View (cartoon, rainbow, N blue to C red):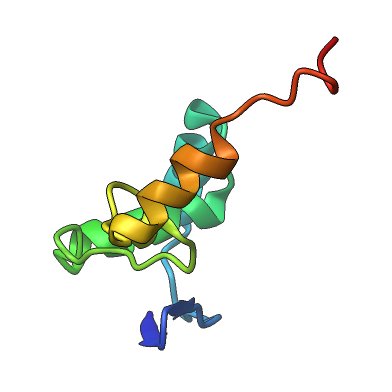
Length: 91
């Protein structure tokens, strides 16, 4: 997997000359875990390549969550305009 900006790019690969016993074992594991055989094989590759430590980047807004300081003007705006309840709308 490689990264382009904030998006994780996945690639499809074909693996040849896989022992039948491995395929059967992967099918059994997928059935036992109730996941796809593809997921079992991806997890096995990740473990086999010791890639568990690599962070998975997400293309979402998580990095912006939390406390942000927009300055005193923002606090005034919140207190003055957004935190007031219009009694006419709620009566």
